[in-house]
Image (tube, rainbow, N blue to C red; front, side, top):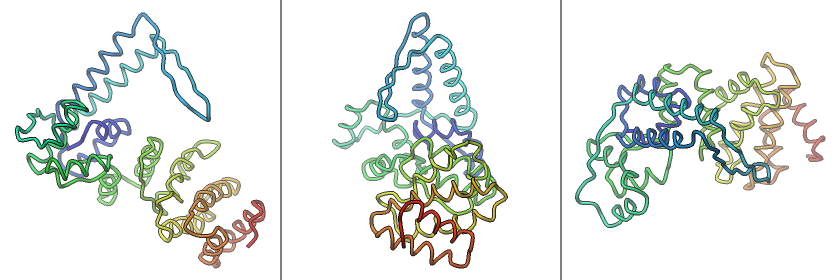
Length: 296
């Protein structure tokens, strides 16, 4: 059972088909389709006039004026997402339980009648709730009885382990989730190297987006250190230009050094200890430290 946000992301990244293959059947509440149709209708009302949106990027507010062409493209995108969901998911009607707790009733009243549809349906037939919002999963389990839940990357990992997704497709999915700014991504050496291999941007923006999940505030130090050093130990054997290897290594080191649980010099010493048998990687780390005035 997918909620609206997770179904939308999976459709946007083209992941519904492999998920269906991996798990046999996908379901969504009818309200998911209704919400997309409502967005399409809202876009329809913008034709013949101008609409505007405000954003914030790199410290500045950005105003965007949308033309009829923009609105038409938006409608086409909405139609594509809706059709993808309808193609790969069974659409289920929803009748909210009559015995709602006061807390659940308050959430529905404040957030909308259909906000918990996926949780209700998952609980009704003991379905697994596939939802990328940890707090939603926790609330669904504790207040709605939807006790079985997992997030999108975990489901994709199942498809990867079953060889439904190959390494390249799995790496592309990780990039997509990173660009969507998911709150958590579990990274491994192989997929991380594949992200670099597939990154066709000049500034390695795809690798940078994925690397944002290294050295996070809640990071488990040893786990992140192991992933980073495994990457650094392998990247120099790839068949890519040395400048690209150096740029990728620098991105990973910079993200790793955000770890606040350990002194940077101690962290670098741990990296060098793990890489001591790899001459090229060790030389790069030493050069990087000198260039960043971090003397060990």
